Length: 456
Image (cartoon, rainbow, N blue to C red; front, side, top):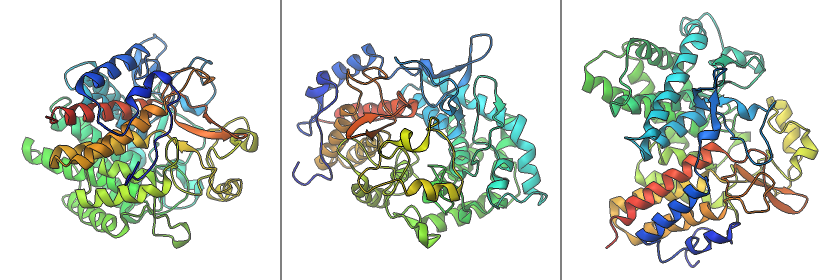
């Protein structure tokens, strides 16, 4: 492990041991064997997470967590449809299968989200855009923001109080929707253009480049780099689509320029940190920033490498902390917090929860190693520098090593959301399998296939 940023532990699944190594990199034949094994074990099967309507047909979106061997998550918010998860899932499905069912699922997913936003959130944005509603206050205003989670089975709003001040989630939708338009898989029609215009004007109205939102993790109110990057990626790509397809952006004439200028400036001041304001919440390393480098590619390679270097601070022996001092799924979380691990917290309640954590007992998440592997894959594909292929292999191996073993109560061969300490044992948390992790691993495998095609 000389010169490497982190360690590689023993995989939970013995059958994966031969693929979980740092070097030499997998051979093409081995990668195909690995993919066939994961298909046979249904590790990457996202179909169980498709939200179903009363008629038994998919409604388009995915629940955050799929049903598992122990049962389902009935009564848990993990069966909600999050915009953030769904948009990264949709992009990953399309990107890894642009001419197949993955592309079809991506189109259905983003169409369903757009329908929800148009029907239930459009009027909320208009109130803010026209100065008739202020949504930048305390938690009493958070439900007045566009909702970033809804009931996937029905397409209805979830009336339960929730922290909806999530600018990154809106940005991910805008980016993913524009990606499908750019690739001519889901061209913009009038309704969707109207929605995009409202979203851009809304983000301008709340001055999202300095808005204190909840960030990727829907928690502490701060200016998050991970919330600034997705809208910026969306603005840049939308401008390209508008120029190519010859339409006028359906928002105020200078909105796109105002957003791009302010978002770029704000992001440049914060990165490679996640938070610099307010100072008491400053965070210099957060795994959410990896998505700015991959798949958003809203930062250049030099900044992307800075982000990866910072992630050393959050790397564990299984996965990565979201950030240090993260109390979500800390040791014996369910005993300490109660029967609903997906309970949401106000800023004041978070302070109480954070007191439960002891250093080194942060949960280790499985979302990030695949994305780090994919980023280094892109770097190798650009430079042909073997050090990046070695890093790509390391983080793919870590991703594979975290796949659940036979003793997992939710079933073997699953992509977990995270591992946390139960008494003194690291175990997968309840949100297993997590669809976001599944699709991240799909992207990591896809980038490894692209990299190995370049190896002589």
